[in-house]
Length: 209
Image (tube, rainbow, N blue to C red; front, side):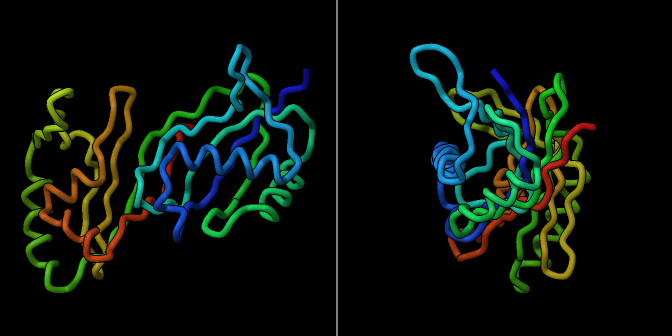
């Protein structure tokens, strides 16, 4: 059986940023079927589409550079696949690029992610002070609940700036894990901004070469 692996870059914005990762998988599955593309399926009693997302996005966070990989049981050019997906994608789900992968290409591994969030003017001075303190620390323990051990956020935090009213976060991703952007907001005392109508946007998902 023909199996063709493709990598897709897409945007998850507007109302679609409010759906869960499981709902995103279902939405993508329906999109491929509406586009008339034959998804490769797993074997066994409950076959599922051969579809993977190297870095799931939390509910409420917009994504401008998201990544997924999928197997198709047909041979079409990347240009044709992209055109079909763009034609049938729902509002808030934008297909940016489609790339055909060579046979045996390694699975994608995320190296780092970058996020942005606007910060209102009256909160910026205090946020800058906390940014300076956080970046000067060598460790910053974060408690993820009773079922998880505390993690050290600081080694994952590569860059943290506030310029022209925009908070920018760069987090390193390792096989052992990564920091969460909302943990950074808590460390800066900005976690309440999401309840005030501001939201995080993941601008970049950088893969290892």
